[in-house]
Image (cartoon, rainbow, N blue to C red; front, top):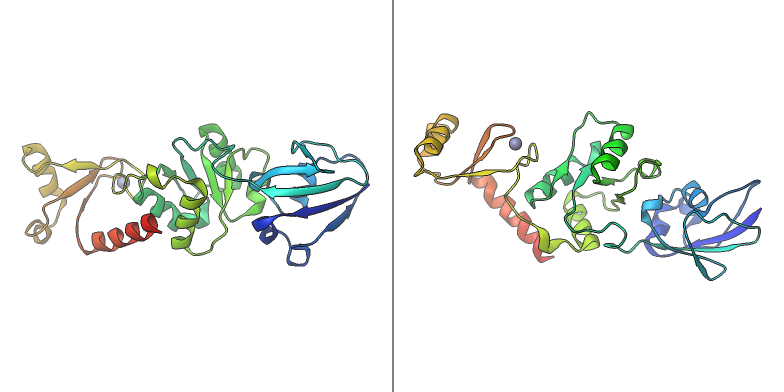
Length: 242
Ligand SMILES: [Zn+2]
């Protein structure tokens, strides 16, 4: 069997360098689907949009015939993922991206203990969008909702994702704990019980000047608007005004 295949747009950056931006001829023996062929060239199915075979649109499960001409286009998001209220799971390396997504209020799981099999499993069972720069992870059978993150810089990764998903309008900054993903509770200092809680968890020095506090019931931490807060505000402005 021999087919010709070409990739469009940013899919080329996923291919081995020598195979980018050109018509490739691939030969093999036996039965093979487009999905299998595409993934053998290091392009995960989660990044693939429309596929043409001899100028006809086909499904990714299409079984190839001898001399087929295959053209593969990148997925356009949001589309098949249905981005109503996106929830994410980040692989072990993308912890900085995970914290930034939580800052924006997106439900984002991350645990450095999870291996590839667990990430794929949790993503599938909970319908979470798996974010990774590992093409091998996205190629796993269980991964139904996944996005390859092209950038290596965490700030650019956030912008890339917001742009690709078109979810800038769904952000809810400062509503989640950056450490654990829990929902933050706003502390009302006029409420005696809340004020007592704040005083028990915040150093006296801080209490002298800080007046707004948020509590994370999941990790039992109290947060206040210090110098770190201003840095986070600048980050948010950068992400949302891009
Ligand atoms: Zn927390």
